Length: 258
Image (tube, rainbow, N blue to C red):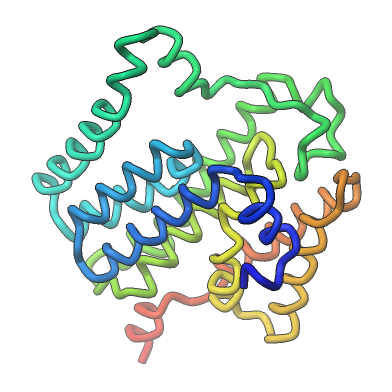
């Protein structure tokens, strides 16, 4: 797939961004969880997080999956291991300039440059940089995360969490985070590019509609610089994907109805 997308090809081979490295580590972590290698998965997840903070978008699903599969005590051990890795990797920076490191490495209040945004080009600069706008996005992000986890997991909490459900929870939660991101830059496309076909095929739409949706998303990410219409269209595609994920009946609900 990386060979078919001009933007992804550019991100991986020409621009030397760290986003592909973070996502590569995360995908290996996800593979470990699928094969029930929980400790190895958490180690790789923490390493991915040390490369790029976007990996935090997966954290609600990671927490839910670990708690359900491993229980509270073992999950606390895994999360402590992840935290220990972060502290260990940060030791050289904490030793040199602890305050500067903490301010810069975990700067959740950073204001992005409007000229580079892919998803909010249609929003005026004054709104784009306003803290109330950021708070509204965060609020909707949290609401949809809880709703998604409820209809895809907690409603059937006593059912089997099969392999596809693990991937769906991780990919769906990530898509919600991306959809309500304060800003998306071109290199951020790799955050969900390789998950988009899977997400599309978890919707009730026709094959033609799914392929069209993927094509439009690809087109939006290849418009440079972004325009009012390309950013609006990207939001529309994200919304269509999310609606499809919410509408698609869960496999466990199908089993109960038969």
